[in-house]
Length: 219
Image 1 (cartoon, rainbow, N blue to C red):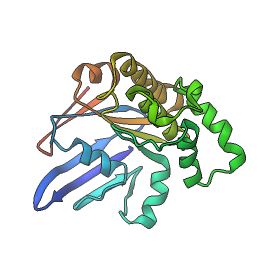
Image 2 (image 1 turned 90 degrees about the vertical axis):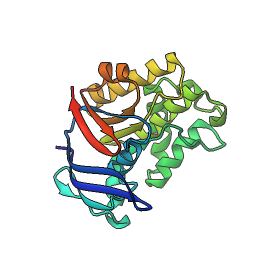
Image 3 (image 1 turned 45 degrees about the vertical axis):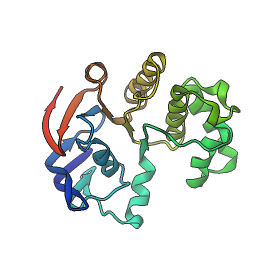
Image 4 (image 1 turned 30 degrees about the vertical axis):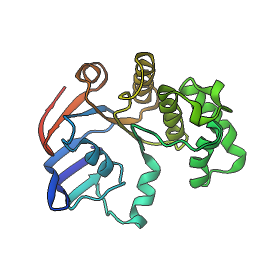
């Protein structure tokens, strides 16, 4: 079991935006989190990424309860990485954008270049290694963001609407990468999407949220 959520609530300014009595997410699968805008998808992903704490309740990760303090979350964030719908890129090269993540994780300088080349090749972006990241298209930016996450050697990758802002060809390229993360790298994947057709062809299990409540799970 990857995650086990019990009696979780997230409250913003007196309003409950997420209310999950129980939710189980198994490892080594692709999960889709579905629901309309405002259903709690992004909030749930932030909690699963250990970037946001629940107001109450317990999150178990790999069988252990998560303590939502910076001291305890640091190690968890090394293996669980979130790729945002609109990834932030610095005004520098693609290489430097990925290297930044490696510097934070104190990867030795001598190892960085090969890691960066490897992950860019995996997402079909090696030719852009010296390009200005600010000049990339939406699909190219998304693939570089995936490469940056892969450089951290994650065990879990979480995507917030990974293809919502890209064209059709880029959507198919990102979907192929997500499938390869699972099938070739044994990385557990959790992604939110509005696209039921996409979810049907890509994910193993769908979790449907409505007004912050888990209303259905299905394959």
